Image (cartoon, rainbow, N blue to C red):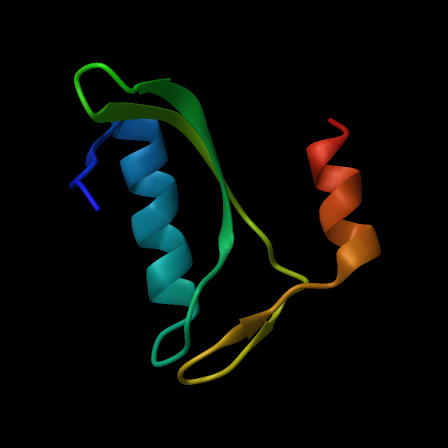
Amino acid sequence: MEMLHVFLSADSFVTLIAAIAEGFKNEVGGIAFGDEFRSTKKMYVKQVIPLQTAKRKYSSVKYHPERTERVLDL
């Protein structure tokens, strides 16, 4: 399996850091939107949406299927 290099926009980085700080000591989960360029093995993340309704534990995240589907329909 080859390494994929991921680059975050400034806005997605700030959103990600805020979600990590909020979920201190627990896993954080969400959805990342962006562009993937397979030929160069790079991904550019433009937007991050943390899923606040997920059940977060120290080493896992469990998503609520219907609530996650609503976010994906936006």
